[in-house]
Length: 278
Ligand SMILES: NC(=O)c1ccc[n+]([C@@H]2O[C@H](COP(=O)([O-])OP(=O)(O)OC[C@H]3O[C@@H](n4cnc5c(N)ncnc54)[C@H](O)[C@@H]3O)[C@@H](O)[C@H]2O)c1
Picture (cartoon, rainbow, N blue to C red):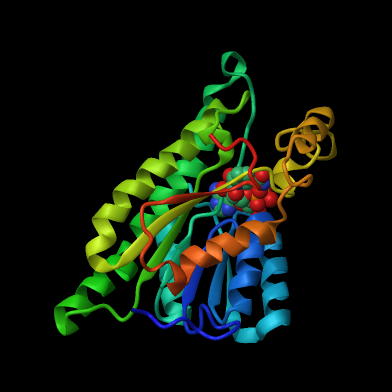
């Protein structure tokens, strides 16, 4: 049995790659992880956002705790570069958080094939690309430890992202719901493939969380977000009376990343404050 670490040491010595960590939930995960003793690689499509998250992590936990790396997880070659840069900087990968995601909402009959593909390529393709690119550093390293000592040093962790919009179905999000249900299938299959190497693969399914993705559509570029009136009606139906904060979701990602969840794999946790439990 793994001993549980002391306060603020749940991830002491661990190295985590977190995708889409420049803002929102991913940034919350990065800040939560460095507060628990991890070193983190902050990926984001947007270099400025990644740099801001990097500065916040360094201000909280010191200069050496984080690296920012900009690029798209939808690009398999980039995903390989991201993992290589992590090894060059920190020497290993213990935790992979496939948080990067985006929405392009439209009713199916109005949805362009470009929106369909973009949402699938980032939310589902990005998860595949990063798991595939990290395999040599997660699976092969664990396999070598098993061959040499008969046991791994510790459980390594992969955390993928579903959504209550997928589990319950959500009008205007056929592309997003398909990608996020895809991540559940990928999670369950990979959990079985990597269990012999003591790599836990789990998923979080956030509900309505206050981020750019759920901001009033009228305040953004018109692509992301939820129309203001629809947003207010949605929030009024939430059992706890407020949306989640990024930290609410990060705490559950922390559970899956830490030794507390060593005996849990192939599962998803609905992090929605009880909204629309199926
Ligand atoms: N906010 C919610 O209510 C909610 C609900 C359920 C699930 N989620 C999921 O949580 C995750 C985080 O979402 P968020 O709400 O923080 O959104 P957000 O828009 O605030 O942040 C997402 C980040 O991902 C980055 N990103 C987008 N495409 C990328 C790519 N191709 N490569 C690398 N980075 C990329 C963006 O630049 C952005 O910084 C996503 O997977 C999202 O689908 C969010």
